[in-house]
Length: 268
Image (cartoon, rainbow, N blue to C red):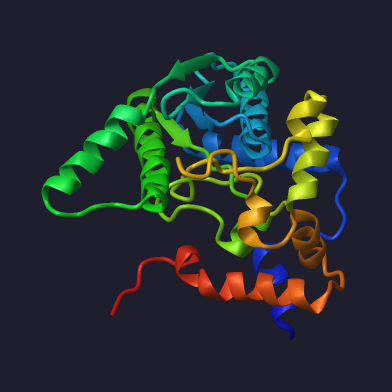
């Protein structure tokens, strides 16, 4: 078996999908989990204004609405968290996403002071972090906040990670990857866009250039320039298609170099 086939099998990406079916599969997956864990009453997603969180949050909102109706339990809810670091440059996209999702509740929690306080404490001990490390601090702070809200709201922290991020390791270990459940994990990037389009998401949101925007020194830097390969090529690789050798080497190198991010902690 080639490495490409092995990766596709492990990540579970389908070469072709029907968006409506995948939407219902994701919702049923979430519904079943909540029904089987009766103490969980809310789904929680951090809203960044990007495609992945917008899709995941919309699926969660639909799930909560269906559960309230089908289970006759009004306590089911979806909670959206806005977790900016200071003033977010694409805040309008975040608000447009929230208007599209129509969450049951929205909380706005600015993480900047918490991140700066942590950085200051490290500095007092002689640990000077780089801009890149600070970016990971932001991602972990956001996840910490989500779990605090989840503890109070009997909630489940829902991940926004998908296969195109997973294969490249383009996520923060114990940050945006540290979630309870990941409904869109088996989708690639173009499939994420196709589900958003099917859900009538505003066009400027589902066609938005993907960017993590974690580094202060490189604001609004797009994912593809960091990865060195386009999502379109990554998606084609995940769909089992033949791609150029240079891109294949980049993708497989990224996959092998980030294995530790996808594995549980090492034990004896």
